Length: 116
Length: 114
Image 1 (cartoon, rainbow over the protein chains, first blue to last red):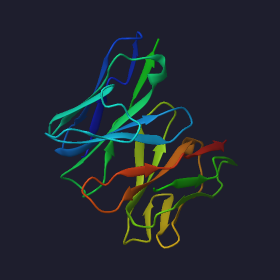
Image 2: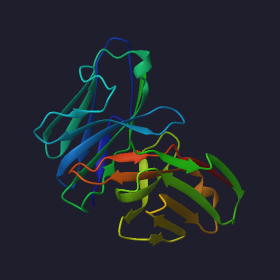
Image 3: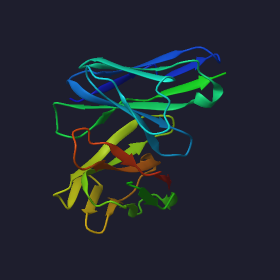
């Protein structure tokens, strides 16, 4: 139980285009979802926290107009990177917590975004 | 602001060796602490989660301890195998509130040589 599926696992896009990444909780209701970004050989940095039906809360320094987060249902959150640029190339990982195992968060497989 | 430090940054050992990975955190008001494994280009695999009221957790060859008062945790791997080669991440859950944010360390890159 407590499986989080992230899609796509990798994506290459042209500079200036937008990319959407999906994060789904397959067997539990995700009341809260988190989006992280990881640069090579660096730690995971929290970008934003979203609660179902509410606006996302962004961490300091994260552009909310560039990284659009939608958490419209208890099983799905999306991260849209708008007008992507090469510096947005990174590894993006989502996690979800909800009605199972208290505060424990479960992680997706990650998405490798490359902007060319 | 919570900071999580992992030492060493990289470790290379021969197969069969027992080893210890260290994690320290600056704010002892944590809810849980969790150890993850990350293979290159992949997501996170949860290894062990220690609740703040616990001192240790064990799973197979892995044992994690937690000392909240000193802000430290260790991950002990017994009889290491080449398949254990990966980056090991330590993360702490922020206490209080309802969102339980995680703060990660930079990880320890472990290489187990056959």
